Amino acid sequence: MSTKRKLGKPTDQRMAMLRAMTTYLLESGQIKTTVTRAKEVAPLAEKMITLAKGANLANYRRTLSFLTKEDVAKKLFDEIGPKYAERNGGYTRVVRIGPRRGDGAEMAIVQLV
Image (cartoon, rainbow, N blue to C red; front, top):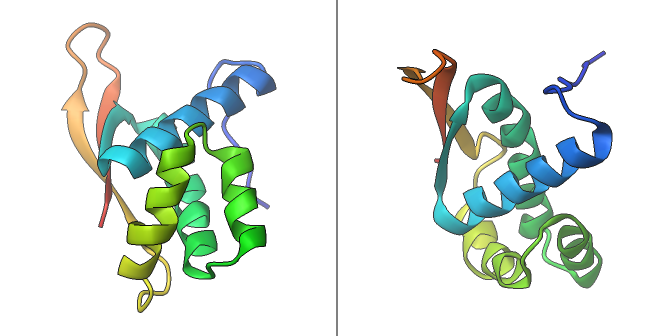
């Protein structure tokens, strides 16, 4: 049983934040965030890439319902999905980069492999 982290936010705010972070990760290739947020975003990005690998209209609509930008969904299906066609999972990497200067929160970079 996997328990999801609440990240100190109500469900709607948490999902909006994770959707935005996933969208930005797929758009730019990497994001810098806290370790706990990174561990939540990585599986969501993996699921989106897996959907893009089986490119059909139903999967495209499912990604559109999750991602916040339409052009990112198009990029996902046109570029990112085919790029990982031969790879079975493990599309993201979480690299710890040490504490944040202001509050000491452990930071990480989430990257597309």
